[in-house]
Length: 401
Image (cartoon, rainbow, N blue to C red; front, side):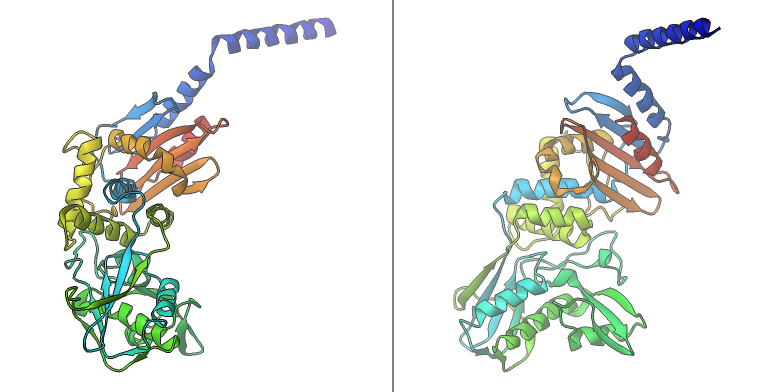
């Protein structure tokens, strides 16, 4: 009986070896990807390509769907193309004949408290005081982003040429008192006046575009940090413009962040404010100031027409918050091919570098999966089916790859 059992085991092993010789790894992968394909509905799309550019899986790949925040990949590429890889945002500081200090913004999305403190230290070496603080936000026209509402949520933060801290303030309430939730940022009376309206214990509140609230907040922050450096203010904070023929440029701040570092923060935090600051600044660079949403969209569309077929992508803004944006999985894949040298700027988890997108009824994900050789598979998943996520599709896809 023992000999018969051993013979059966040997026969089974031989059959298994023969089967494995007949079934290639490519066949196994194709079978696994076919299971992924079944999870993709009529209102969804998927495309997966191997490191050599061979399409392994495609379903509804030509259908134009809502990309949500994966659109930021296109915005990033358009900005690098038009602005240049050496581009850095600047902010200029002038004095006039009346000893006023003027600040001219050019849309720097990362004009944060640490940068303002650094600028103020530099200015303290050039001036000891000033009369009025005049804020020049004329480099951008008023920007209305489709899809952005007037909530206090950071993803609804408005855009402008002279803004600080993403036009938000982060606070907490302890023992009945409000304090800053960030050690580098003071909770100024200007901000406190706004947040006292809300009975929240800890929140990040967004400043509004109306009545130039976003610009005035930047001005109050500059005033605070200048006073901290011993530079005294003798007047008010007001909106005005630089007269380059008569005013004196005393300092030009060049951002510490390269365009790639800006894009890295944009993609890591999926920051809508950064995306549209870059878009409008790109429009101003290509078509001349003032920057407008229309010029930004035109610049991004021109880039898309250059690298894709003209007219195949619909862009209404740069962050993906608008439901009017449209792109196909096939065209998003073409953008991923171009973006591959910069894939490390994306969020990274395990073998995956990726960008997600989320709107009501829309879930998207696009990026790269790294194999053991360090080669990259490209994938695009666009789910426009309400109450459906990308999680099951991605779980099956990562197992297959």
